[in-house]
Image (tube, rainbow, N blue to C red; front, side, top):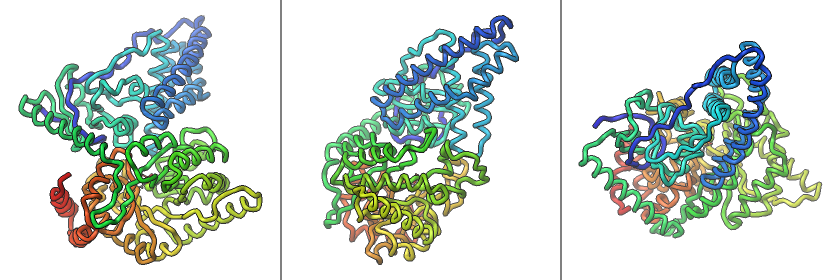
Length: 571
Ligand code: PEP
Ligand code: MG
């Protein structure tokens, strides 16, 4: 037996045999006779059309099997296939170098991919994988091959491309191992959405894995055990079965109310990226939506979604659960989520740049359209509006003033909307956490975004695996900021929740409840587990634990204490 260490991209244990995703073989001639130049261009245009049809079909299939949000990547691929800069580069290569259509596609795509790969922005860097994926598809089509491989077991690849994953029957696959990628790469996102164990970023060691090798993936710790002894296999089989049984048992009782033993309701809500995610939210027994990341309606689009389009999306979410609280966050673009239609911004540090509310207050037309759409949809349910990345009181007051301006315009136009929509902010910039007492009188609620709060407090890029030990929400300064925010909210009679990754970590639940949080919003898969834990707590005891945790000095001490607390429950 030997071990591979990587990034734990999707929790869970998977046991199975390795199957490498086949790389396409470049067995075509690279140059053609000058007399064939126009024929090659026509071959490319024909392949482009087939690719578009395939991508439409893939989008439809993925929307049905995995989810609409995951399927959107194929709409983006279609745009890339049609992109004039790709077409121009391919034609140029055919024309000047007498390249075959296949060779021209490879060369043009490599140039575009390396341009993406050299960008500062993580989101744009990851587009390099998309362009390679498109090239692979076009070359395959040009060679007259069809996409018909049946993948089973544990998949191994350099990077799992979206089109590879769309061809996978998830009932036959139990996990992924990839050489490249981080927690935000497509493969990781997909693995988490599909509930598969995954370890990514393991490097070239994948070349030492042979088809048929037996492996255990431990997606909790980011470890792969290759050709384990029978005793190890048996141990993990037992762990896997116990995990599956636990998930099934928790799902059975996930509709029960998340009320502590001493009668306090802790809302266990879910985070969503598109209206289609509401199905999973309701199935998971979530109390509502604590974070709708509306930027997903804007990314991968060539223009700003219209007011009507947005009203339709917000309405769809609100009407899916009219009696539940739905927190919709206004556009959090910029940083690692660049909008294709706001170009030309060259920032040295995009995470510290024109992002979220800062960007919205510059591009006021885009922001006002979104606010109008939100207010119009508000009549359909229990909408809460939330502003991201608030760092100062002025930003909050300016955003609220703009919301009021939009509401007044709607009133003047006689357009129905609710006048009493609660307005809150994300606490994800340390400055906001420090002045929570100044911000609290101006909001209806706070929602703590630990993903960014950790990155900005610890000065550690949330995408950078080299500083992963700092990017930990159990760092004492992060816990102290959370405590400060909760205290300020309570003193001003406002509720405080959390929608960062920490909210879905059951190790943190007793601490967060003890600090006074009354809403936790997470990935739908974590809802049953956290709800179950809430039902075993008393707020009284949790407060006592929180006090004990607040005086600990290191992450290790904090995790140790929380593990000890968790062990005291029959989960
Ligand atoms: C956060 O920062 O914790 C958060 C929930 O926002 P996002 O992950 O979308 O930046
Ligand atoms: Mg954030």
